[in-house]
Image (tube, rainbow, N blue to C red):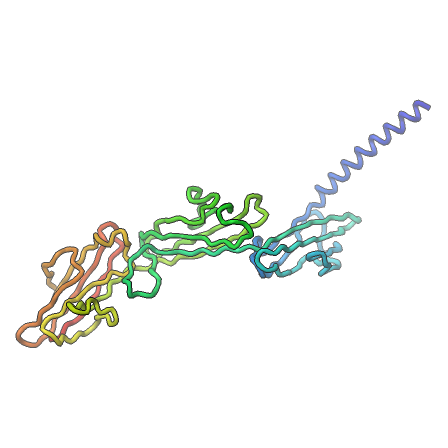
Length: 319
């Protein structure tokens, strides 16, 4: 009797071990993954889900997709499924059940909480007060980047992971770091800014990237009036007819770095000869002669702190 009891215990032990090993081996052997595109969808976004497995034939498996508790797709080989996330802050639950060959059953559950983020950029470059457009980014200028997250949590508790031109920037990344300033790329290049925002346990994630095109600064010439000031309503270009005895031409250096604005050097030429005025003077007065004629005026503005920030312009004064 004792021998029979011991044999039963031993059999039960080996059966339990076999069941455990069988369960582990089945789980390992029938591994399956579900890929989502995009992997971090925002609100009201169309998402494509696809089942991938190299351990069994997905096309012969019976697959059931459940969206927010409701069966949406079921059948043999139904490995692809599309759905739309909810409004901002809402949660979308996805469940997929798979019955593979041999009766092996697998199940995966996923949740998406709709979040989003915007990236704003501001070039710290000069524009006149009357200019209503946005300052362009130019070579070597400072650019301020700011993230505006749309999350169910406070922005100060979120973790920001920044990239510039596909390189991680840990110095400007971290909790609450939704803004930073960096130096732009060289002329004719562009900066790609990437951002991943997440909460502490990464249960809510949003990604965004933008391209910042790098342009070139320019100078625009205006007439400076002793009584009216700078006439920003009409730029001077091409042929200018001088109606008074004297005209003062003022240079506005668009998109040069604000921090170097007082260092800009201006070179004035009249009919190809340098005009001996102050090096940092952005205005030049021209007085007509006793007889009629024309004069070609050229001006060049340059930033001694950045040789790639320069621009020139010209006009012809008829008198």
